[in-house]
Amino acid sequence: MRILHIEDNKMDSLLIKQVLRGLDTTVDYDHVLNGQEGLEYIKAMNTNLDLILLDINMPLMNGKEFLIERNQDRDMKHIPVVMLTTSENPRDLKECSELNANAYVIKKMDFEQYSADIEATVTFWNEVHKNSSN
Amino acid sequence: MITNNEQILLLLIKHTPSAIAMFDNDMRYIAYSDRWLRDYNLGDQNLTGRSHYEVFPDIKEEWKADHQRVLNGEVYINPEDHWIRDDGTDVYIRYELRPWNQNDGSVGGIIMLTEVITEIVQTRKNLEKRNDELNSIFDAFPDLFFRLDKDGTYLDYKAGLKAPMLPPDQFMGKKIKEVMPPPMADTFMSLLNQALETKTITRTEYSIPKDEGIEHFEVRFLPLLNDEVLAVIRDVTQLNKQKEELKYTLEELRRTNLDLEQFAYIASHDLKEPIRMISTFSQLLDKQYGTNMDSTAQEYINTIRGGALRMQILTNNLLDYSRVGRLESDFRRIDLKDQIEQQLLSLALLVQEKSAQVTFGEFPNTVFCEPNQIGIVAYNLLNNALKFNDSNPAIININYDESPTHHIVSIEDNGIGIDKSKEEKVFKIFQRLHSQDEYEGTGIGLALCKKIIDRHEGEISFSDNLVKGTTFTFTIKKVS
Image (cartoon, rainbow over all chains, first blue to last red; front, side, top):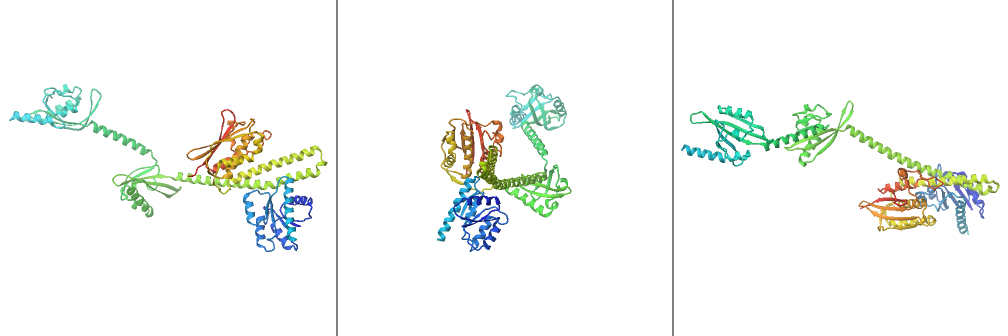
């Protein structure tokens, strides 16, 4: 399974790696710092992406702008996107849902909870990925 | 014949409908009218042959002199004379004194034609007094007054503190059209006519550039009688300036408030991420290296996590607070009691911990409000009623009342109460009345409640209960 994490906070990437290390499945994990880098990464890539973890507030191109780009791109719009953000603002949730984000996960303060949420998310999309590949 | 003539004369005098009396050379009554008796309060006594000065012992000396002059042939007319009687009453009379001649041409006596005009004079004096009062009120106005006729001719004026253009006396006898620039004159004439036609006051404002800057005046046209108009001109330069300043200050205040909310929003939002990092990584540190650390190091890590947790609660509350002003309105008809009960459900743990007994009074079927926002108010008030409560059991009574304009909800507890001297502080943001060790909190809850109730055009307040505890009351404006 291949995951791209679009997030401007490098420490968050550290955390995700920590969580993924504890999983049974092997995950190819890459991290870029904003939406713009995300688009460039996907375009330069020759293999398929199974999941994008997307932050909202980022410099250059934020998560919502990335969603708009992704929706307009034939090669990208089938890639599942899970929002991973600190924002609990209902407006953010509504807007992301309207922009066809597949899920919205709020980063928990408690590491155990945070870890559990990421684990559940990755496991779920891994199952989806396995079923669609079969 | 003569005897007959005299009798006719006496009869004529007796019945003349004015106060008339005829005297001989010694001022003794020869004849008098019934009206004379009545006007001078003489009853029905017989005056014939009696001296005038005996009948009126309080007669003025100067009148006696007048009588003598008339007995010498003069005619004396006085349109108004004042007579203070011995009993103190004021009498005003108008009279004519004429001599009458005997057959031989010599003066035989006086005929007095008098009229008591006390009432007329007193009415006039009252009017004059009222007029003086009105004039002094009039003079106290700083305004300039012009009286104009229906064609816009200036009739007279009362000068004000300030003249808009020329000194007012230079307008007299001229017409508006002759002294005002055309567009202004047209406006004034149409307002003047409108005031006369509609019998209402019409007004406008105009500006005049002067050396000291532009001055603003207000003119009002008041319809008077006789197709005349009173123009009242007031200098409103200062007033307009203050209005402008007030408007500007209000705008600035509103902007500052928005800036502040925006700041609170951004600050609290952007703070979340670093706080989460502190919290999460101190947790990871504990998890992965905890076994290698001594108890002091452990304690430090716990302190870091505790601080991060508290900062998280603070930023979340601050976010809630800053959001209230930014929310789109979401007013709906809801079951208010149901909404409050839901909040109690999310406080179930605390309710259980305090063995709380909660009762509801009668509530109306629906109330028009923002459900989530009112939910936050109820949550905070209930949370406080439970949290600041050391009674066992904690008792909370939730009641509804209404005024013609507002829904009134009260939440009564038997908790620790609030010191009256802290009243000012209670609804201010970040104000806490207790140390963190005693009661946890961020000092945002009631400030948030106040902001939400402001949005509902209501009020929030609290009062001490007679025995123990506090009653918080909030109101929600009704919609028709």
